[in-house]
Amino acid sequence: MSKLGAQTWEFQRPPVLISTGTVAGKLESEGPIGHLFDVKHSSDRVENLTWEQSEQVFFQEAVHVALQKANLLPQQVDVMVGGDLSAQLTSSYLGLKQFSVPILGVYSACASICESLFFASFLVENGFAKVAVAGTSSHTSAAERQFRYPTEYGVQKPPTAQRTVTGSGVAILGDSPAAALPIRITHATVGKVMDYGISNPWEMGAAMAPAAAHTLTTHFKDTGRSPADYDCIATGDLGHIGHQILRKLLADEGYTHLTQLTDCGILIFDPNQPEVFSGGSGGACCSLVTFSHLIDRMIDGQYKRLLISATGALLSTISAQQHETIPGISHAIAFERIEEEELK
Amino acid sequence: MTTASKNEQKAYQQTIKKYRPAKPMGKNMIRAFLVGGLICEIGQIVQWFFVKFAHFSIQDAGNPTVAVMIFLAACLTALGVYDKFAGWAGAGSAVPVTGFSNTMTSAAMEHRAEGWVAGVGGNMFKLAGPVIVYGVVSAFFVSLIRYLWIHLV
Image 1 (cartoon, rainbow over the protein chains, first blue to last red):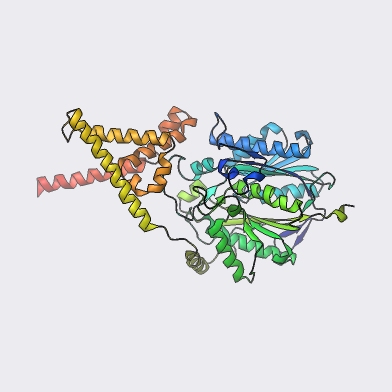
Image 2 (cartoon, one colour):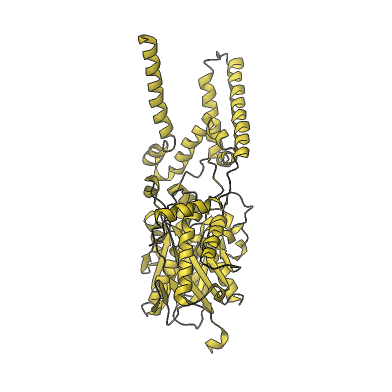
């Protein structure tokens, strides 16, 4: 691993993607990419469990599915790295305790998936782990209840609001390209906290867009690459409104005509679905879309290089009540397809 | 610098205004007017029932009428209908007593998993609490002013 420029690390022995697991809630399963998820739930609540416990089950299921697809047993996993939005990371720790595997909880709000991937890749590359699991989860009702209002409370939301994604997305990384997907992780750009004074909790897209713009431009400068080197650049959960702001910020930096730029929060829902407003958000938004829709396109060869820049809004229930501003953070991970010639 | 300067923050907040879709004020106001009025009409019918069939005086019929409206809203909240209706109706459903009922029922349902005492009991007034606190406080001061006016002026 070597450091490039200010904020980017390049993997000398890039870890490979062994498998992915995706578990989705009701609205996500009914959405435009719903058919791609491994497990589709018809209800966001597992019978007799609370919202929070349901989220733990979804996380657990995603790891199970990923292990199953890779033909691995939990004992073969050296380390798990996970994050979620529930206070004190209960979805990760309580959800994954039954696997009895060394586990690290990480938090960058909705950008946690890229932080998880960064640590897991680092451990695999340096030989500290042969097999590492990285994943995140989120749940719309658990998040609403923690950060906003009770589920059944009737309130009119503004069009800038976003819907927290219910589900979990997990990836298994390994050190050997044999029996793995033809995809490796080549770079990671770790973001800085960007504060532009947004304090309205209904404007997460605007709060996070400067962080995404900063991380993306830094990634291009550090690696000497340009947006054209990627077939797809996807931010985590800026939503429709945040995405337009990001385009403006990137245009100010001289990056225009970005047809490959998209956002997981836009991809996961159809604007005509009920109560999705500006789009999806939450820790599972980026991981669900990346590990199904986007990775599938890498497997079938449509994308050669993919850049994911997960975005997080940094607030707690306390900081919001005390009227602190909501800074954003964004970490980027670059995926690359391994062509068959290279494997020989 | 990752914390933008005051000027940069101001410029950014100015920029994003263009990207923020306008709240549909006109539509929301019309909906609130119609739904709020309709809820009051239903209340009126309930009150009329109490007067006509239970032989209450118009004044006495007030309390049981409010109870019926609260009960209806609580039922609709429990059935998972009220939040969808309120998301559409906005202030029209929030201002009448039905909105108050919804805040209490939804909070009670949400915290049922944490038990009857600490969960339901402790959180039922989470959203409704401020309304009660400032309702009582303002009622006290209004009556105080009225008292002083009548007795001292």
